[in-house]
Amino acid sequence: MSIQLNSEDRQILIQQRLKRFRKQFFHALATCRLQFSRRRECLVIHCPEPWIVDCLLEDVEALAEEARIIVGARVISLYFVGEEVYQASTEPNVPLAS
Image (cartoon, rainbow, N blue to C red; front, side, top):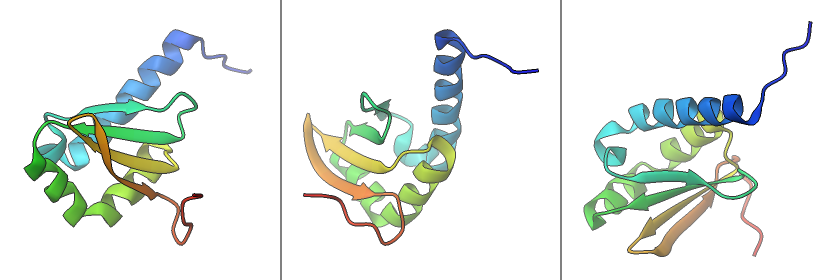
């Protein structure tokens, strides 16, 4: 028996994955807005405060690994005041294409 997910089911699944990811870094991500790029390859993290960016950058390797495992993102991107301040591949030893 095959289970078919409709778009509403997929959206719920994505929200649950993002919720679980947020719990891994709750202190830093509590006030951040998380969203995926259109093709869901990049997890975009909008940080409202500069100290949050600093905190996430201190633990960026763990952040990238958890983003890959929990939400399936290939890239993470940190934004502050509407501008990208950091982008990294979540795949070990895979640089970003320029």
